[in-house]
Structures are given as C-alpha cells and as structure tokens.
Length: 441
Image (cartoon, rainbow, N blue to C red; front, top):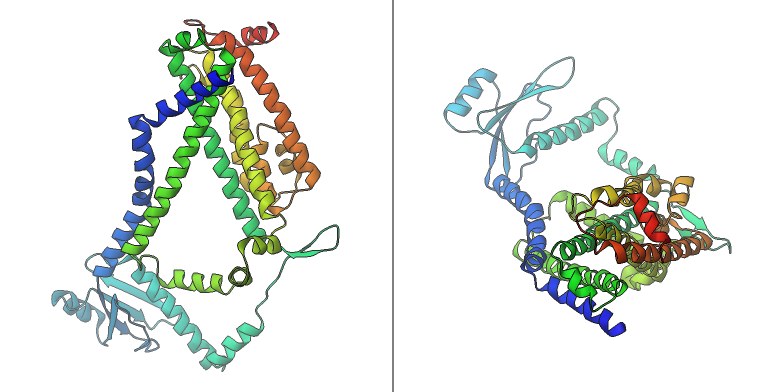
C-alpha cells in the first residue's frame, strides 16, 4: 500500500511540475508582481526627476521672501509688482513653469499657484509644507517672542514615550510591542489563508479533471480510493511547497537585482528618516549585539521556536483539513461550477476567519478571537493572528487537539464520500444522499 501511495504522490508531483502552466506561472508571477509594484513608481520618479520646476514667487506679505528651500527639481525666484503682468510675462517668455502669488489678506494666509502646463504632483504639497513651517516660526518669534531653538528644546523635553511591559505568572517582565505583534499575526493569518485557498482548490480541480477525463477508472482498477486520495493531497502539497520556494528565491533575486540597478529608488527623505529611526530603536541595537532569536525572546510574549512550530502546524493542518473536504466535494460533481454548492459551506468559515482578522488583531484575547481560534475550520487563521500577542498554553494545546480530531473526522468523511462519488457520472448528488453514503460500510 505504501509503495502504491508513493507512486501516486510521485505521479501527481511530476505531472504537475512538468506542466507548461506551472512553469510559466512560477516564473512569471514574481516578475509580474515586481513590475506592478516598481514600474509605476519608477516611471513617476523618473518623470518628476526629469521635470524641473521654475517657480516665480510674488509675495505681497514679504514674509516668505528668500525663505523657500530649493532642490534639484525646484528653483525659486522672487519679484514684486502686478500679478497679472508678471504672470503674462512669465508664461509668454517661457521663463517660469508656474507663478506662486501670496496675497496680503487680513483674514488669513491666502495664496494662488498659477501654471500653464502640468506640474509635479509633489510641488504644491512641498510649498505648503514649507509655508507652514516658515509662518509658524515667524509667529513664535514675533507674536510669542520664543526663539526657535528654545521651542525645539521644549518639544524634546515634553515628548512622551510609553513602554508597554508585560508581567507573566512568574513575575518576569518583558517589553511588549503591540503594533509589531499585530503585524506579525496578520501576516501569518493572511499567508495561511492564501496557501489554503490556492492549494486546496488545486486538489478540487485535480479530482474533477481525473473524473471528467475518466482517468480515475483506470487508476481505481489498480489502487484503492483511499490511496488515490492520500496520494493526490500529498502530491499537490509538495507541488505547492516547491512553487512557494521558487517564488521566494526568484522574488529575493528580483529585489536584489532592482537594488543593484537602482540603489536610490527608495532613498527619499521619508525613507531615510524612517531607516534612521529603525536603526536607533532598542530592538535593532540588540540585533547588532546579539542574535535575532534573543531579540524576539526579549520583546515578544512568544518564543521564536514556538511561533515557527505553531505556524508549521496550522499551515499543515489547515491545508489537510480543507484539501480532504475539497477532494470529497470534487468527487461528487462532474464540473467545477456544480462544486460551488458543496464547497460553499466549507469556504464560509474560512472567509469568516479572514474577515475578522482586523478585529482579532486589535483584541486577541476577546471572546470572538478565543472562540474562532477553537473552531477547527477557522483556528488555523485565527490562532496564528492571536499567537504573537500571547496565548495561554492550554488554549493553544486545546486548539491543536481539536484540529487533529477534526482532521481525523475529515479523513473518514472524505474516504466515505470519495470511494463512492468518484465513480458516479451524470447525476447530481444531494446532501441527503451523501449522508446516506456515510452510513454505508
């Protein structure tokens, strides 16, 4: 039996890996994703980089004269006079790309930006940001008589920083980064969801393809239905793992290539500031002094090993549960459109789990999160969302035990349905008839 099951696994794996669709999708998907992400950004950056904006400033208030900062893409010149005449001369002589008029208005700061052709989308926001800073600094000095250096010093002295510290039952203290816990949990939950929905659907389509082509009749003559079912599920799982590993390698290579080809692609002011803050964070200092496992242990309420082992468990158990159910549902129909009425009751809990991910991540120990992490059809996603924030050990073990028991039930259910349904053609099977199969020997 083991040899035949292994042969089926090998057949499923080699047949699917050699398909042109597998090769094309595996290679093209990372390239297409990179193109969709980076190509528009690169085009925008290149267009704005090549578009130099010459701005004529007409300041009736005289507050902003010679105060705007220039850069490689924007230069400023200052003139006074009639705005209509200055604007006409600027555009007729093609001397400036836009005219920025600051009105002397007692009701507040009013300004207009005149332009003839399209200007960069960031120009207006850049000017507004500089105006706010310049006007605020002037208000501090003229109206409140506060020097800018004193104000910045006061800001530093009044800056509030709250550190969340979790105390366990033994009294040990641990800094807890709630935002990071939420991000890790949501990433794990969404990843498991996509893995389940993609690979379990492949099992369904594989069963339907063999049933429609009558290949299954030849296979059943030499192997048992249970061997065929197990071989198909495991074989497709190995195909998915292979495809995922290739995606990781290709994506890493593409990102590395983009970094080499365009090292300044993301080195704008905001990115530089964010990188500086991350580099000065305590967690980054610990990573420089020690290893990543110790840093995770110090700042997260779950060990790295526990997170990885739990992820692997729910990744495998989630796939096996849905793959067996999808295989069973695929065996009772003749085409994919008819399978929707059978797979929908199974898919609804999966959709419920993914819809409630934001709620679970914000309140990981609430009743909704706790119950969804115990229900086997939702726990692979819900428990992984909760886990980085800290879950009582008894809840984690209970959830795992329920999933294992439910998987045994799914295998029994799928074996009963698959054994009869895989050889039935041209007849729509009702749920009543499926339940009658379960009672048969």
